[in-house]
Amino acid sequence: MNKSFAALAINFVGFQLLWFVAVYGGAKGWGWAAWLVLAAMQLGVWSLNRAWRQDLTLLAAGAVACVVFEPIWMVPGLIEYADWPRQWVAPGWIWALWLGFAVSFNYCLAWLRSKLLLAALFGAVGGVFSVTVGINFGAASTPQGWWLLAISYAAVWSMVVPALAYLARRLDQERGGYA
Image (cartoon, rainbow, N blue to C red; front, side):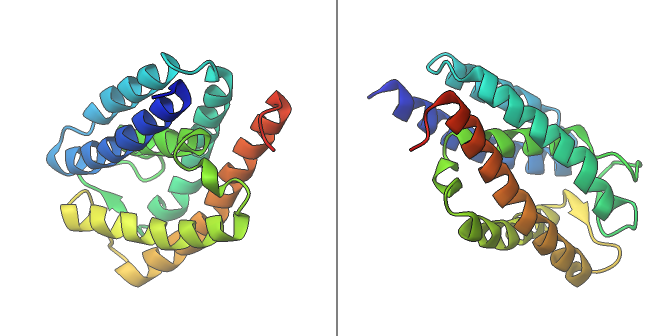
């Protein structure tokens, strides 16, 4: 197995595990464990791959996205996270999800880099699906109703996913790796 495929596999499996640990942990009060999964995922990838600078940029983009977009849902009460009293900053496990998702555009989501319209559709549908499953796990609730949250999630994620895909493509082009 070559190192590139191994890094992609680690990211793919790691992000699936990250999502589950973050959301289920968020519902059960141990969402902090998401940071351990994110760290293990990144250490595994970085042990095989020298593109850590690109990863750091995408990790930072994930953090910025969390700061910018979570208040859109939290402040007006479209979403409330379990055992989280703040309305303007997301819980740590949500931060870990944003970072893990953003960095995945260098690995298992790299296929979306050149398919921005598909990335928008993927974001709209996937974002709503993901938050709905998280709500059903008990990690969050929708005080204003599911439809308002779903519409706003679809709108935001239809922009976030292509933006992250584009950023990852640009970073790869600058490094000389994108065809």
